[in-house]
Image (tube, rainbow, N blue to C red):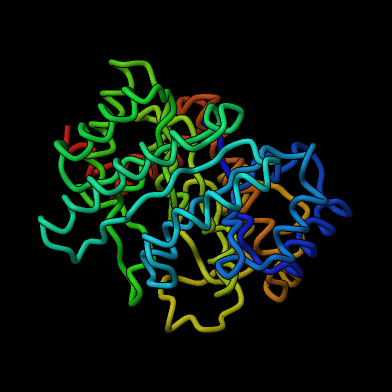
Length: 339
């Protein structure tokens, strides 16, 4: 399973992260696969320029469609088509191009959800026809919907278009702006159904916008091919860090009331690092980790890669304590009930 790190960041953050990795990092490049929204007005043009200058030839680069910003009301879905097409035709340096999708948030009626699913399919078909062949074979359509019928309609349409890699964007949403994806029983059932279809018809799947590393064991067990997330940098903005197979905890003690959850102290953090077998240059000093947001972000990024590597070695290679933590995950309980 591959992890695609969000790069839709401020240029100075991206530059700082890259410079710090190149000075202190070791091992596999955590930026070997990245995703960003390239459209001016939705992402900073300077960020896109920085990515082109520093990551082409280094990383596998994904262009997201901007569907998230449609969901947030920052751009109309009708306007997305032309702007995205124009951008893609003038910028052919990415490796993956996500097709436009119309995200149905959790608060919509059944009729509204069905309308957005059909709009997603129709626009994907039109968009595909306009794309040059050199780009079309790199395109990734997005599965949307709240029912198995919606999922199957998307899959049937995309397979008819010739696609053999599909994205899953049908997570439920929470937060004041409906901007945080969550894995509910409904979404987990739809993702499991999509994986059943993938096994039957021989296509690969990508999960968009994973909000927590606690989902990674579930994605791995289902057979998801890849996923992307901004949680590694987003949660660092609140002073939170991850460890493999564990949820976020606060280290800065700032805004703890707002973000919730427990806080680490130096002794507890060291003990859980040993338990999870995590080591990285960005958490060697707990005091510096407490104070430095970029260290927190790079630590989180490496934790995600460590979690995937551990799963690929096999759950049986983990300590009994970690196996128990995975088994007790609320997402695994969802999965057990679904099965």
